[in-house]
Amino acid sequence: MKRTAEFPANVRQLVYARAGGRCELCNSTQVEGIHHRQRRAPSNCVASNALLLCYQCHHGKIHENPSAAYTMGWLVHHWDDYHQVPVWLKLGSIMSRWILLDDGTLDVTPIEEADTGELDPLSDSIGHDQRAEVTSREGRGGR
Image 1 (cartoon, rainbow, N blue to C red):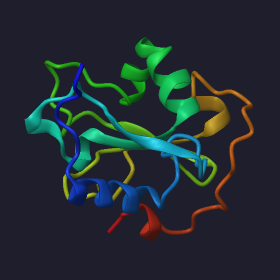
Image 2 (cartoon, one colour):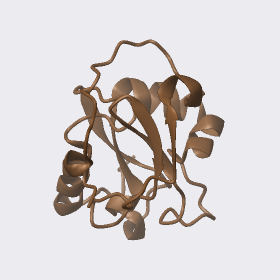
Image 3 (cartoon, helix red, strand yellow):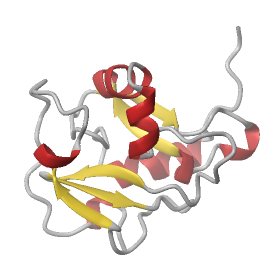
Image 4 (spheres, rainbow, N blue to C red):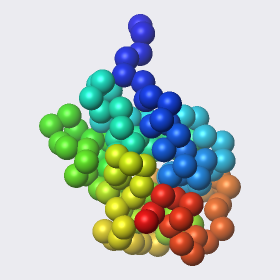
């Protein structure tokens, strides 16, 4: 079966730049590709509907645990507006809840922050690469 609605090259570039080339859930440098938060459609191939993920997060955290993935904003129901559904992303050692924007940036201020050990319902000790503490959001597309 042919996959439809792939992300255009300019959107892939925006997402890779926002993520700094790392998995947006665990900071691994071993990225698999870009994940659609909401089911693929030609109209939703935009950066606000995209997450850069490693294989373990894409399959283990999201597709094997859809209920938790919807709670975390990693999946979005077809009846919801993905532009308005916040997503938990890992910035340094902190998980923060953000609104993703179509220009590849994050909304200026995180909605919430939590220590990753207390927040992530799918927390595991896979031992992915850890990004150094982020002191600014520049590398992740913040303004």
